[in-house]
Length: 373
Image (cartoon, rainbow, N blue to C red; front, side, top):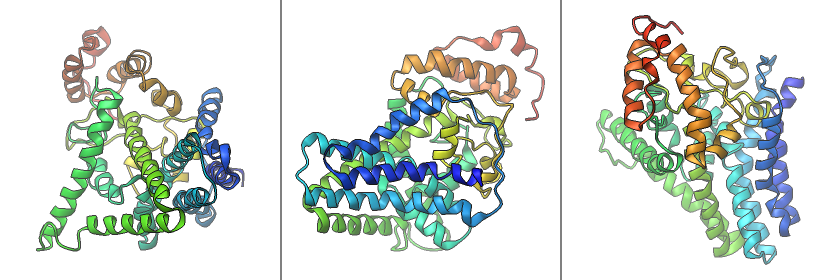
């Protein structure tokens, strides 16, 4: 039972955000204040390599559903708070950040789990709760693109070596949307329909967005719409930045077998629990239908710091590059890369102006070997 209880941690985090909205005033900051608290706890606690002993799918999925629907309802709670209290500018900012943060954690991993399920209802909910970060079609690019192209130059979610967080996030905002629209158009064409046929999911996504903001307006007026949209934008930017840490600099030849080595895992106790194992997802790329609680930590992988530490360090690109990712990628090249991957990595290193560590003896001795990971 203790393993089931671990995944109620994100429900608690969501509950804190709701409590802040219901108490009002400066308490609306409570949601975003869980970010530094989680960052500290995840950093000081040891890594968690334990396997989960969970067999009851209904019990395991209950917090998933709460954390998928809860953040959407939090927008309504924020609109209600705006309708009953004159919030100061600082308090509105706190509310926007709190709601936006809940749209990242726990919503992203919860919706991710739902739209990877086989049932129509979980997929439907998984699609439309993504309103919280303005991307009801995100699953298209994720499933059709990312899971096929991961760690290749064609994967928009894999940052090339030398790319900074800010440029990656800005490009990802555009590319993820364009990719989803293109893939949906291609699917319609294959069915003999126009690329912009009324069945295109973009129209339903826009309709859902309009209806959502009508509800916000009915509850809290135009101020609720402005704050709600601001929170959605904050969440969207944050969501796009998250991919930066999951595959940064990892390389794979297009069409080559996807291995567990093509993912960075962040195995902190809180990283795993509040994100429903999305930071422990090497096995997820081998079997996208594998449920979150059956994902096994990759103990042989290069240990990465807390995902919170990675995010905060990436805000200062030289700090991220020099202290975290360059040492990790150097070790990845030496210990995990195939000869074909070494060639791609060397090209990216040169383009980034990074040291040519592949000429070190350890790598030279391996260039004719094949890695079976």
